[in-house]
Image (cartoon, rainbow, N blue to C red; front, side, top):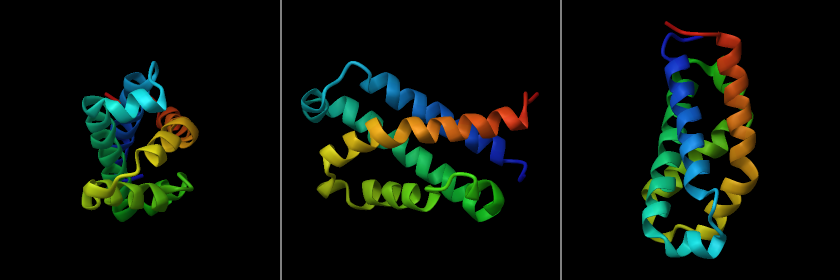
Amino acid sequence: MHPKSPKWLQDIADACALIRRATQDQTLVGYEQDAVVRSAVERNFEIIGEALNRIRRTDPETAARVPEHDDIIAFRNLLIHGYDVIDHVRVWEVIQADLPRLQGQVQELLEEIGPRP
C-alpha cells in the first residue's frame, strides 16, 4: 500500500461520516431547500472523489478494493465541473443508497491496515 493511502482512506471515511451526519434528519425536500447542507455534502463528495483519484493514481491495487471508484471519481468531477446542473435528487439517492456501502468498504480497508501512529 502506498504510504499516503491510509491518510486518504481516512479522509474518505471522515467525509462519509460528515455527509451522513449532516443529512441524517433530512428529507429530500429539506435537503433540496437547505443550501448550506447541500454545499457541505457536495464539498465532502469532492473530497471523497479526489482522495480516491489520488489512490487510483498511486495505489491501483487499493483503489480496486473499492469497486465503484471510477464512478465515484466521475461523480466528483460532475459536482465540480457541472456545479450549475447538479441533480439534487441524484445526490440524495447516492447519499441513501451508495454512501453507506462506500463507508463500509473504506472502514474494512482501514481495519486491515490497523492503528496508525
